[in-house]
Length: 278
Length: 295
Image (cartoon, rainbow over the protein chains, first blue to last red):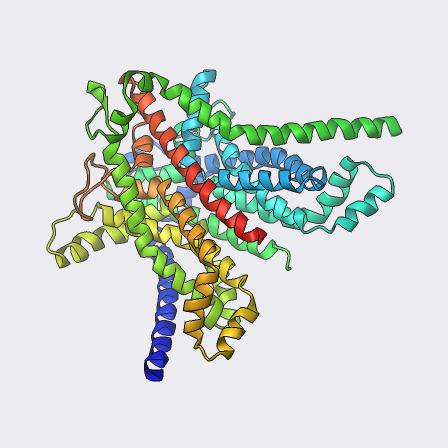
């Protein structure tokens, strides 16, 4: 009996370790595969030029259009989402402090929203865009991605604001400040390092998503100059070039994947480093 | 001076409230917009026919979503069958057996896995998983497969859901009260018996919710699955058959949906279907989590 128990313990301990090792191995394998395929095709030309004639048959050019487009899109969407999220998160933690039930309802609601897949946001963005009579454009993409990352950002900010002690709020009122002043001068400053994490998280989500921009942002070979022009994005550049039968074009897709992975890696590592220690 | 401060305060609180209302109305707007767009289809076809018919001939005005629903659900279930044991046992290892530094090392690893964009997972699937399925796994079962199959989609999807589920499971196991484990150990149970009989039971609602939310996450995944699953409209008979998921259908056909009548309505109906299913799943499992946090 004890014999069996001892070996059951050993067996499962080993199995647990094995499965953890598989997960680490999967990550290493993914990054290694993409790097191995993509790094040889990385060159200055790829990151610094727009596609030229015959680019999609393997000739001259780069993916500057997609890199710049992705940055424009993700930065604008993050700014827009921030402008909406900040008041909401502050409102929840200052005005609604007394109404815990409502507050919990809102948190629940935002968590549910987090689960909505990006393709649904994309389809909705597309519907809205057609309804208002706009064409595929950077602006439409920005609005769609912003709608997608706003719940994520609010919840991340909310988690930071939640940890601020109520005494700070009371002290601020006692000194005669209004709720707005408490919100923007005290709470905002106090939570700023935590907000950086929230922003990076949302930015990473925005830059990596393909399904939401597929309908709305369009695709073009040029770097966009205004919000009404269509724009290329990195995920779509990878997706479209991978479906090409020509090997050079495919290799460039892997190079683009390396660039995108690097951006996301830097974002997620810096988000973790900025995270305030509990 | 005081007046202007009061004015600022009242304007800014109204603005905050407006932003909040906007955020709360957004999902309603999404639902309403999608319903509005799919009305033409709903008024000309029966709902049961749309859901359970497998005739998909858009140019003949026949829209049966059954093959897509079956494909989506089966690829998701298959993915979870792969990822659930991995996540469960490795979260147990990380919180119970492993040294502290290893958990610290794993957190960024999970973060990175979670952050990798789905199109990169798709590219990895094309490079590694598709050939693996066609050259190694399919011959093993004496089946013919091009590799673009349900199984390839499920493997890629499983890897994508791992960080999501694992994070939630780590949360569940790290909130386990220490005394509970100590009580069990002092009664003579081994570490594994404690985990099996005490922790798994105590954390069951959290664990179940993690799986449920993982399921909804996987169901909505678009690009990565689209790239490796083959996209053939059929009800897959085996795991080596190609399939076509609901999100994949929407993403793949946005270009031509304007040229065929009712096609755009059908795609929007697909999006609506996805939206409703995922919202319901999310509400159920989030509710379970909230209930268990209150106790």
